[in-house]
Length: 196
Image (cartoon, rainbow, N blue to C red; front, side, top):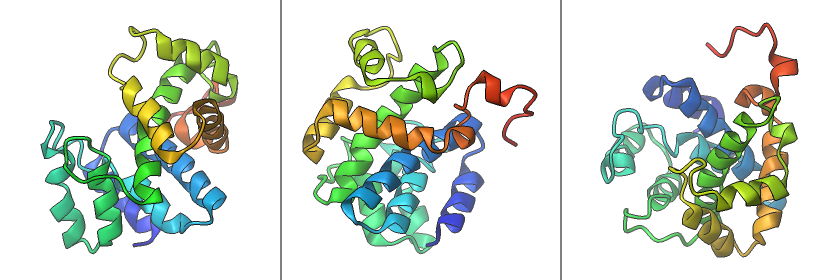
C-alpha cells in the first residue's frame, strides 16, 4: 500500500481533524526513526497513519484495533503492518517484537503528549516545546491525564533509547511538519481557515 492510499483509507474512516493530525504526528516520529534505522520508510509511514484508523468506529477496547484488522486485511494491507497495529494495543495479546512494532508503540502516546504540550504554550506551537518542559508535564498527573505515562516510559525502554533523547527526537520530527499538524503556532496560522 502506498502512503497516499493509506491516507485515503484513514480519511474514509476518520472524520475528526484531531485524530487525523494524531496519525500524522505519529507518522512524523515513526518515519523519522525509519530513516534513522535504515528501515522501510514507506511501510513505517503507512503503519503509523493507519494505527488508529478504526478508532472512531471502534472507540472501546478491545474492539480497537481488533475489529479494524479484518478491514485492513480486506483492503490488502500487508500482514506485517497489521501485526504492528495490533501490537500497539497492550490488551491485544500480540507481543511487540520487530523494530516497527516497538517504534509505533513508543511514538504513539508520546506524539499525543507532545501535541498536548504544544497546545498549552503561548503560541500553541511545537517549536516552543523542549525536553525539560515535557519531563515536567509528565510528572503532572492532571495534565493530559488520558495519556499513559507508563506507555511512554516503557516504549522508549523497549526501543533501547534514552527517554530524553526519544522526546527530543520526536519533537524534532514533529517540528518538521508542524503546519500539517496544526502546531506551527499562532503567528504562522493567523487567518488560516483550518484543515478541511
